[in-house]
Length: 222
Image (cartoon, rainbow, N blue to C red):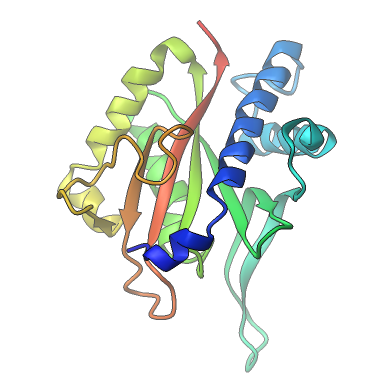
């Protein structure tokens, strides 16, 4: 669990500013209606455009750090030279004020079970296994939703999926002090994200358990 000492130094205000920048910059791109920024566009094409515009206009949001996209993460075995736990983060923000990085993993999300399974397996699980953020206490999942009007239904389906025993087990889910697997409102950034989930990293003895803050962006605002 996140310790009070960690909370004392984590840049919550800057994290909120970055989330606000992501949401508003996504909205700018949606309004431009680019051919390669559509609901059917592949996630990497969406996030690289988002990263580039975020880098160009970050000063508008008072951000002094910098953004990267599709950054390679992994581990190098110094005995064999082999690479392990290779992965590419969607968007990474590096703070200049403190030694902190925010990883944002984007996944398309609909009402369909296959979509939720992908969000679990190819999103959350990458944090749980340490492919992403192996030394960090907190990071972010971003759901890409087509219609904002469907967001409540889609996110409700997602939160209900966490109650399934096989999902709870696979994602090594932890409860908060009240016994909740889904923390809503968020205990970390209640004004910026939809909810939190907590996950044990028992297979990674040198890694802390991780809290994931979940929020969403959409292509159609009504």
